[in-house]
Length: 256
Image 1 (cartoon, rainbow, N blue to C red):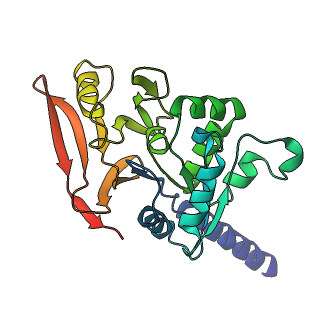
Image 2 (image 1 turned 30 degrees about the vertical axis):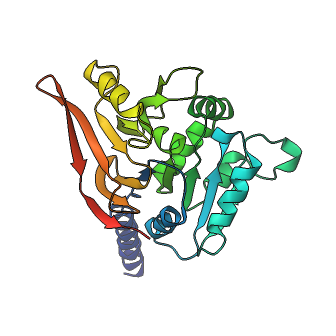
């Protein structure tokens, strides 16, 4: 009888463990793309998205060439916020870095990508394997965020000023299956070029975002628009009956 009882207990424990595994909720994949540069309100919103107290948030300034002034500005913006601010440079040497890119980035609660040269940033990420690490971080539920180059990188593609003379089409990491246009209202050449590229099929339909607005995606689906003021918006731009269709996405929250 004791042997039978032990066997029943063992089987029961196994079923309980399997049930716990089967009911495990997958991490929510979240991207917060804003149209311009990082600001204190945007960082407060990222902190809220992590749903953690004093989250670890890493700034990835690759697109600026790890510009010192940009890094200083990042620390100044974050210095009085309830977060642990850090920076992951890519212009480094082995003997100054005790952790790999993967070890450091996967230990974060959120990753903020700077503005700058999108094309150079993506090339460096690919050479260093950071593009693969960011995919792992995204799938793990680490918040992905950024503006300008830092928002463009998450989408299928968009236009960039990374090359001389004219804005050029660029292909991003494609976490979101849509195109993107940052600086939508602040840079006059952006909007007509975005319309033309979508109309001609060079870019897929997508999301255009003003500098002081942001869009949240969860599990690759649009969730909400937020803005720092009531004059800033985000839009979904597509083609309907052979013409450009621009739909303003209602702002769910004004963030401060």
